[in-house]
Length: 399
Image 1 (cartoon, rainbow, N blue to C red):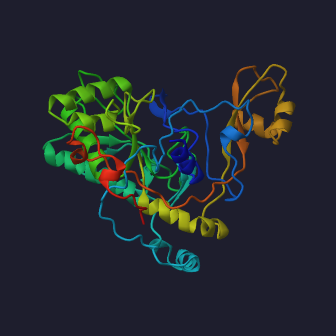
Image 2: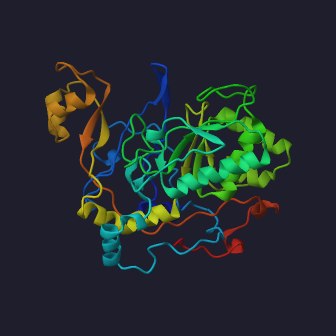
Image 3: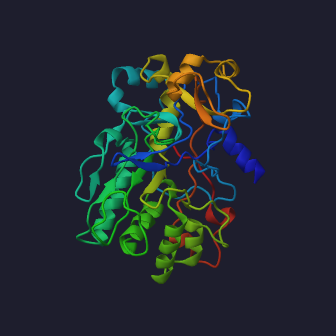
């Protein structure tokens, strides 16, 4: 198990924090409250990770590593028919030339991690009969993310005619990077989406056993798990319990439900994960085999030709007794003026045990090819226990 986790770390596939969003209502509008904000840095060789800067820096409140592509004990890559990658067989020089002369042929590019990344050539979530976009300026994603969403919602509408529209919240900015005030939503692969309700509840209404439309919401989750390259779905633990009870009541396979929700017959990390603040919406995080591989191929060329900006990322510094702005600035290799501007500090007073944001410059290493975990299809769990890697086939690397 340790070897699998170490391998995933070396591949750059395990982030130090999940960066799932938290939200609050401000002035009647919905916003997300975050603690650490990180963006794609400038130098692909100079990697500075937030948790490695200084032991006094407050860590992310999210401990679950959910951007895994290699999961200890996971099954091999699912047998999903995939066309060759658009850049397959092209040299780096040819890819760079294509980027300069025909950037539209590169397609959407997901760079870095959900909480430390960028987006190039993003696609705005279009209008559709089954959904309503809450804020069109913050719903840019990769083509894969947009297609996954549209497919899932359309399938729910096919299964349940006259389904009311579901509301889509934030995905990413058109260039990705930090989307205030989220932690994640930086690389076009994270989506906030509402629940289906059985009453007239609007966007961001708290879901419970009375107003949650179980059949439609469960159908959305099941289709997401079986038909898309989903990495994780963040939902409040209590709502997960309600949804699992419903799934069991309609006869879903118990072993498969263990693989989705977590349970005694599964050694896999669950797809559904608890995150505080997710009683009002679901947070989806996808793998993007095309956009992430494209990012691996074009990252250096994008930086070289200034197609993407090397923005700042932020780390948290928790003030100790005896600290001053001057001491912190020297320790963190920045200036008092920058610290004050970043944290909107008036005067020179700071407070012990309070956490302040410190801007840093850094980079993101280029990962190796993404290795997709198996899609957790119910058919794999019809026996008394999930298949072992040996019985499920040979793992392969996505193109």
